[in-house]
Length: 557
Image (cartoon, rainbow, N blue to C red; front, side):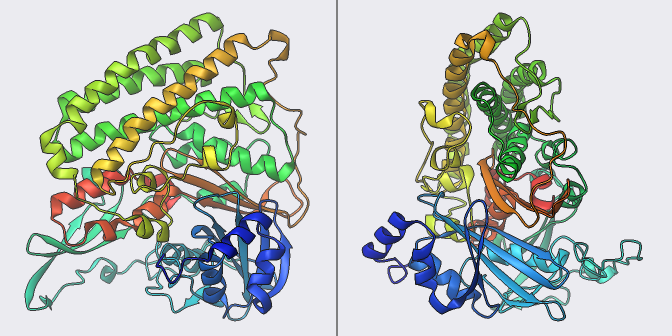
């Protein structure tokens, strides 16, 4: 945000004091043509040609500077785009901007000139729903090839129709030896099956000599229609197994919590305190699983260290997997959370389980010191990561970056603390923030977060050990069939391993959602890669991509 965009102190104080209701309505004035009440925030309906001015006003005057999610959907009589905006300093201050468009011509103004992260979100809305966005910098499909017929989330989509992907979809865009400023350029394809891409990600890299002149992430290779599958499942029983599959790096319990928090808000379910403590402990174990894989794989990416750091990280990860397996019965696809609580209590004998976890926690500080010796103190790794992949705070905010990527750029944003859920607000822990804005800072954040997760787990163990036996309630009394009121809408998020994992649900009065939208943190974080890599060398690009710790299951969904 530039100095010209910074809201005045008076405006910020008024908005902070009065929240996002009447004050924001007064601020937006005649742009608001209607208002809705979503469970998480006030929603303002604006015309399709007022999107940019509305969002610019909310960003500059109300300091709602975080476009966390964009949801597109089709009704019987209209299309609709919802922009979910928050305050990076206080995410409990939020609002929704609802933009309806005509059924016959679904066309709306693009939000990309205001929030750069909107570019990918709107491309996805165009690709899957069919809404076109004027003034968009690059409106084309993002998950499906350009030759795809129809939009899979539109009401009239023919899923039985044939599809043909032509050769030109994979043609060299630099064919004909195009020259840029009199220099030779070359197209370098990295992926979609390159080990450095951490999954089926394709990078189309334009090189000027050995310098990265342009890089475009090409996604959609592992799109599994997770949103559509959740829309076909029942709230109570059939959706919960899916979130684990959005992040196969071990963060599945965090993903389960994202769905649980959203559905519980939708159905007004209150989770027992005992179950909240178990959720908090298991979620932090899941975070350690994810970060250990991220740290070990980063050593492999940057300095080719397989025998030491990578195996050290996998060793620690295996210890955590054994603990989580004993708790949940699974090593990766846990399916442990339930709406209203968790599936079952701690394993018996409880004393043996507590001892196993405490043994791991006692050994962890020494292991973290070894990681610092092998990684953060490694001169070669420092040469590869310090001052490479730079991402300044304002650019990170414009792209909607969250998690260790944002905190590595000095953005003190963590939903566990800033929009508390579970038992986090009653425990003693710190948010790990580094202001280096480079690849090195993002590595340090993840190592520090492992230490903070251990502090949280240790306190949860103390609570669980002393919890009265007759008060160990693991689930609320949830109806067997959940049918929220029609047109009830909610967006909720948790602090997943990669950042803000949010879910939007709209109900239609049945036991399945009418719309289920997943906001994967890796989707927004990955969009910032060109900002980090352009003007640097190819090895720096690999280091920058690895520092994002993307997981393609939550990018493509």
